[in-house]
Amino acid sequence: MNKKHVHTLLTQAVALHQKQQPAAAALYHEVLVEAPGHPEALHLLGVIALQGGAPQKAVSLIEQALAANPQAAAYHYNLGEAHRALKNFSRAEKSYQQCLELESDHESAWAQLALVQHRQRHFKAAALSYRRALSLRPDNPRTLNHLGLLLLAQHDFAAAKTLFLQALRYQPNYTEALHNLAVSLTQLGELEKARESYQRLLTLAPGLPGIRNQFLRLLQNTCDFNAYEKELKIIRAQTKSALLENRRPDESPFLNLTISFAQEENLALARLWSSQNLPEPAAPGHEL
Image (cartoon, rainbow, N blue to C red):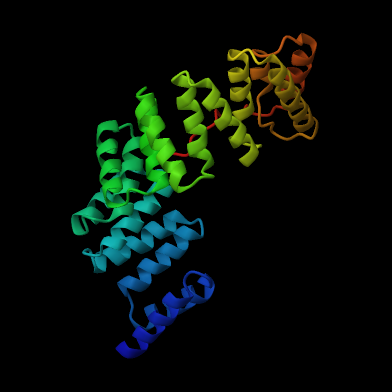
């Protein structure tokens, strides 16, 4: 093995990795021809597989890299990312923990560990991991939003609101945090501020599923019937257009049954929806 040549190939591949992945992958394979089992080449091929939507292949490659170099924190982290992509949350959790045993201040590993703990409903552990991640990077809007979501689910609406506002301070157009802020403000009874948040959200992301129906309920609760009727017309026009074009509407017509008294139109929409055998959209998420 020509170590100098291997080093040159690896350096060239890393330089190409972000923008020219096929060329980088070809060079990593050349490294493996020169140095079979080279851990960094295997690891970075695994990263390319993960970024290319092949997480199972990524797991195989990165596990081979770890067999050769089990002390590489980055390898454990990216193995965790591959397992998370496969929704193997318990395996992802173990990989992130192994990364942190080697590199305790790895902010991304703490944030992703919190995320998979949250997914597994390990709420206390997730909160601690989110806070550790934020101690390392207080301005991470995604981590602020996720910790806010955890508190929102626990009905700590005031604390959740504070975190969503912080997330938006660092990323003003972060639609998931803006949506979550609107939800927390509604729960706190701050309906005018909630309305402002929904209006801004609909400007930024008018097609975000479920948002217009939520906004409609808010308008109903504040007795602003002029705005309510205007928004209702938008919802129903968009829903009918989507159904006629055989597209999934952003708003479920079944939700319209609870907000409109136009019974014949409701029935027609429901029949059209049913005849096309379209699945009802999932409830809007908050990016978790």
